[in-house]
Image 1 (cartoon, rainbow, N blue to C red):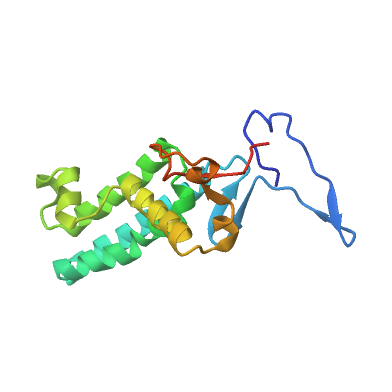
Image 2: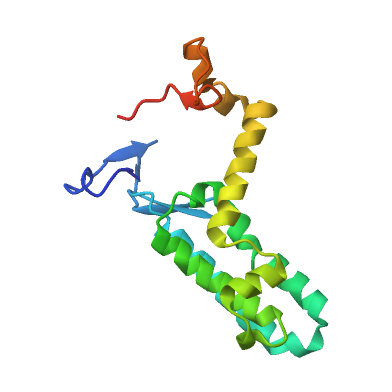
Length: 187
């Protein structure tokens, strides 16, 4: 797979590679540890998979909703429906607002399924009642938690070693002196 922007890949370069005499097929997307990566890094295919998985789980839970007490139903929905939002959310947080809106719609459906009188409360009210952050906030929080661990615990070292404090580039106290940068350059 060759990755790049639509502009850089518009001429559709084709790789002709072989290993041990066997040709390697070029693909436009691939699954890596359950995460779908496409050649443009849009995450649209992965969002589609998450949405389908959440919809299927919501439909199944809806059939058996009456057999659960409300607190148990909330736990089941959080563990089975919302958990796909957390898997690789640090990567997924860089997707477009359109893709995040699709995931938010699914979270809203799960929220409506959780409460006893779902249509008497607004979506924001449901999220507040259930204490669920929006999808965007949920992903931002996960990303910031991961960044905090990288900075404070210095793990994984391969990422931590690429960070340097902006303060280390000069010895003046500025608003950005507690900020970080990398030495990575775009190509």
